[in-house]
Length: 205
Image 1 (tube, rainbow, N blue to C red):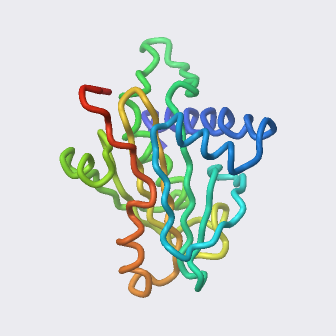
Image 2: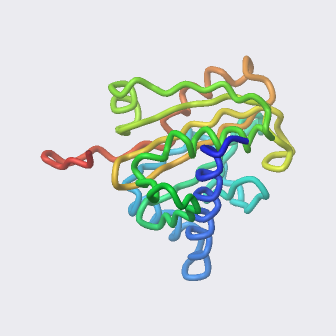
């Protein structure tokens, strides 16, 4: 693994710990709602999808999960407010990275981890599409064969990463076995998590 990807790995783990550590103060639903509000996000699962328990995994922790009635499409959501982010950076020759500048590397690192180190083809949305589709300053997606350490009940995954400057990062992981069978529902579910529209005059740039 290159030196450049080592930093996002540490960041992802530290941020996960910060979010999960608050779990003792309130119930799951209230905690997730508070997290969404803090991160300026809106969550609306597809109609008919049922809740599943969120879990801690060796690869990545997530705060919300839902699945289709047929069980062939699952959606896992992780929310990471930037103000909770603590960066452990051990390069004596460089300054600590700005949280608003590292999200593409965090995304690449996370996609690789979810794929068990295998190839995870990815593409960033053009800025205007990221804003139009998700009210995001940046968005990207990757597809891969999912590692069993994250999901043993499905074989394929699609990671959608969203970023709003100075506010939060968010990750939506779609799990399935047969892309052709879920393609239509998957496309419709891409807006399960979006950033709330900015008020007039508000600028997070």
